[in-house]
Length: 303
Image (tube, rainbow, N blue to C red):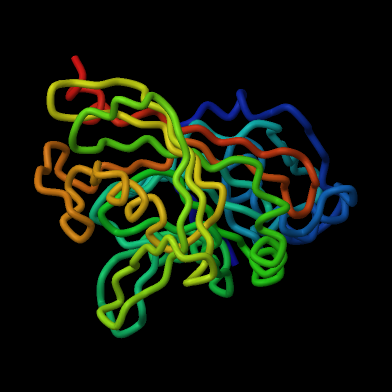
């Protein structure tokens, strides 16, 4: 059976970095696994998904593409220049185990099956299932709907559980840039309190030790204007709504954050953006560091 394939818009000669000749009838995925035993099955699938494989002059992502004796299979070490794009979601890092995205405000991190709305998780599930219908993504680091910045997903339940179990040891840095109302005169400092949810599911803060979960947040002033301050914020602990509550406690609520005291909304979202995620990779053990630029609409307030 012949499988129709669309010609790639990329020049195949750019893809021909490793060439392997086919010795007999087989299928592409099986052939690649046999010829590259040092690569895992998942890694090879990822190369196919990223259009790093061509048969002759034809780039293909098809696992069961039929091969015949004498054909040449080319393997490109670099990903195709084609980018996967979604509205309000951008993939900034992908490997065999993890996907890191930059989420726009207004997009939920996850959504229940009852909520028939798009979420970062549903969009990524759609993406990974283009390569295998059994594929899933599992949230590790999430953001509130009306905030923006870096989020992380695992490609397996095993990796998700490993990271969640050892999160405090694996996480090296998570840094946020935040627009707050008012001029913060103390250029850097820390906030410590104990956080818990009330009956209305709002996180409240207490100065009484053990009256909730201990939360510690560090901040530094980056810029100020007549009405707002831009802060770099590093939470020492990872509690629900921690940054939002702590900045309210300081008397400088986040711009756009009505739930926690914000009265102005100059950036059309809650003015919180996850700028840096750095952690020890759960499989390779290497340091993974991803950085996102400060949103332009944040910076416009301080020109």
